[in-house]
Length: 155
Image (cartoon, rainbow, N blue to C red; front, side):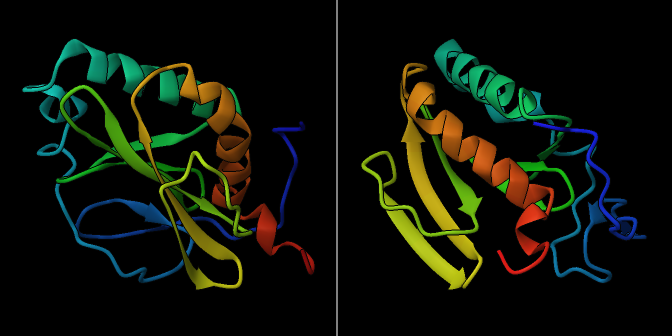
């Protein structure tokens, strides 16, 4: 995989209120001061295993290339040009979703919601690091969505 592949994509737009970057100008979002939402706050009252699962998931994401980890008020998002994955820490596990360009029916997903022809949200629960072997190819595909590779050409 060529991480240095150049796309003729415009620079990311930065919200003047919260400084978050987006692929689309004036992207709809909830402005939240990044200082208030930290990774530490998400894991304060959770078992250590929850943080270990998060770190293992993040390592798989980062194996695909650079990523921005965005702690938000109720979740932690992963973004390249656009957000492509989200995790919500729970007691001993993670609830999350991946955004894929195609609908993928697989037992690792508890629910799949289609928002547009190239925007399918795949929900999952991560309870054990061994699940990452199954999720890894889907994480890689979601990372490509985050890079907006699915918008190049017709496919």
